[in-house]
Length: 431
Image (cartoon, rainbow, N blue to C red; front, side, top):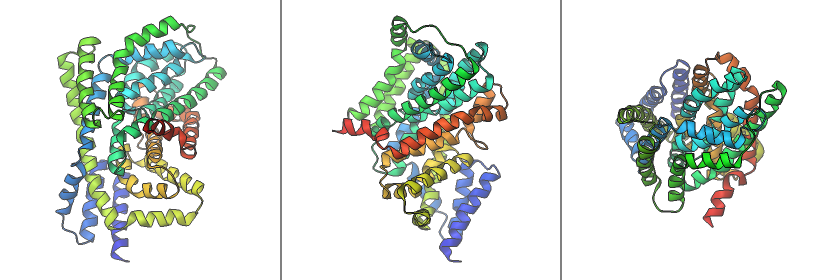
């Protein structure tokens, strides 16, 4: 066995073993890197060097600001405003509250950028509301967790910043713009699935649509939605960088949450900041250890080997694109979102570009695949949160989610094979 093969077996084998033994993901990444370095005769000083290099990035400074913005807005009384806005828009349909859940997730995702925050915040309000109106608890929970993935696609999303940094040379602004249509496509596909189920189960309709009520709720929700405008328009228009826009958005969200909506007091602000620090510590240690892991992958030529293996299966671009999705979906079942982006992107992105997939389009594919992974056992964090919030056994939630998995896979295939879904808005505004 050659030294490279031995190193690859040690690196990936020890990593997978620790994952299945339920090691914290950062420890699994870090320890497997140490074992690999030892087998390759590398000095262990390489580990801290590569970890520091991984977080030594100006673009990554946007991540803590976006996380802080999402927490402040998510705990500052925004959820109720966005639910009311979504209800005024789609509540009149059959299964109206399911539609409200999905549309509210689209709005809220643009603020939080987190599927977990979406499920915890909107789910705690909407799931009991749906159950009281006659919806089944497992269906209500399934709608909540699947629609929460819209927030990963709708900007500003800190996962998009992580992907852009890992991919190298990707415009964060273009990636932000690329998420709107895929997010809307995912929402529409989930709404179609919800409507079919609602008709079969005779779920209720809401009040008739009123343009007056819609504009009234839009005016109330304007302050929340304006945060998205500040970030996206500012970055795309070149007024400020992603990091600067995120910092401005934090100040804005603080003002809105404390002084306008008054959903937070100063004690609540400090508690929110503590939550931000906890989340940020997890994200940064993952980025740091994954950088060292990526160094080992490059040292061992794993990306080149993976490319040869995948292209060896078939030279058909359609088959290769499907294989890339399958690999990401499988990884999503055993790993969390950030490490998948950090570890898989350097390996799979060159393969994707070799068959004509644009790096921005591939970023959307990666994020949606990871989002589906958040809903699948055994590591589906959002699945667990939804089950807890909805007070429904996980087995029942998984069964109720099966039709929505189909809706999400249809959206994923359309995004994979119709590039303009992701690239239309960035290309239009780039001209």
